[in-house]
Length: 496
Ligand code: FES
Image (cartoon, rainbow, N blue to C red):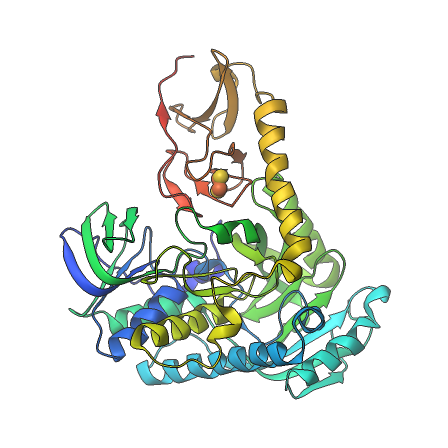
């Protein structure tokens, strides 16, 4: 069984160099996922010079851990979006998302990208009796959004009633798409750097400082899933992790399309790719539930209950940021007009990423964008976001209190940390995050998150230190994996 995503296991192997010189460009793009690479594609096509700075490998962050599904329906249900925002905004959301499916299809054909793109219907169906009536409302919302949606049967064992069917949706290999698109657009005017970490963003002087030098830019786009550094918008986002598995079946047909179950408190997403059944689900707040193995176990139990699974070939997890008012934040950041952000995509980054690239590119080029006002990053919607805003920020405050005042060390002394694990240990009255490698080496870090000072938690499955407040994640050597933190956890020296 591979502890990587199916996409990482089957994608084209595309590499880019690390940055090793200072340079000046029109636009610096921080983040080489689908948002950043699409922005580069559009800006270069419009004659701008760009530099894309990716901390790890292009497409292998959130994009390479997604579902590979492209659908207009939103994970939190169209009817909820309709109740909160009304039919006009609902229509903009549906139209803009559908337009991005067409855009991706066109891009694939333009560059000849081999990424298994197929048009498929999307089915959303009740898997609990209490959800059957919900389908009527979801159907009505889909029609109000301008979608040609119907109610139809679905041939899956857990379906308890008619499904909402939306045709013209699509599926692809998301990592192959992004990696091959990046390869196609890379040039002297489109510099793409991997393994290059951003250590500072000076939005006044418009300089991005990285581990490979400085990049002076007229505009900067933070295409990092959640913006790096401190931004008010982070109080409007809830960071979640969700799990995925790809399995082979002994018998029975693989589902042909995008299938979502409606269950409380969360749904499962089911699709197939290249002979594998893919099941996604079991989400939870980042850093607040320690045992990822339990979630994988639940997901596998669920898959085995409904399908004749023989082997599980891949397991992975991905992160998303749920916005308090249900809409992503895209456009000029609140701090500087030349600094752009794109965040709060929930589980829809494969469409909201390209959409963000369009909106931001249009703004940089001085072009009108018909969808921009609905998604603008510096909006203030206290009524629409109140409930979730309070919930998320009470949750963050609880983490501070629980971890700083009440949390005890996981083990008494450094020697008690098992090989391959990480624990909080109290040394001279201070908590220290200690990791012991399988070969017996210790790494001691400050457990204080470098974003805004919450205490990190050990993630035993992914071998990372995860922050429960805004979703920053750190490797065992303290380096940032993802999230708003820019600086690594501080290295400490301790003895046994
Ligand atoms: Fe914000 Fe850790 S991610 S405090």
